[in-house]
Image (cartoon, one colour):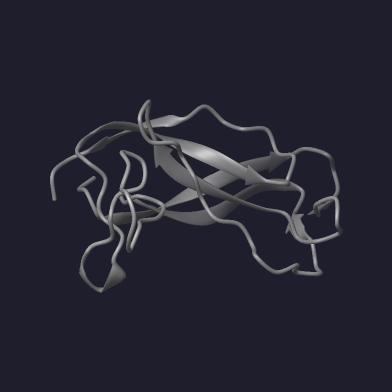
Length: 128
């Protein structure tokens, strides 16, 4: 994938419990998950809900494919202050910069679902 580009993938969940799974966090709010790119220098981070959604994430019995999007960009940037390798300065109009070209892995980022984490998937990020 090219630096700065976004892609859509699917998280496949095999629910073999025989009934729907209603996933909430310890506060009774909807659990969530995301996917994010990372490597030895850049941690895979992805945002979660900032407000409590009162209904659970429901996973039906059997196989479910849930769409997720991810981008070959940093997760955040600085508008002022000292930039670091993991948090660079923002581009014009506050846009988040693309990741440097290189080898990354696509990680499952759990926000309270308790689902098992699959093995990360290798992704090559090429120049924009």
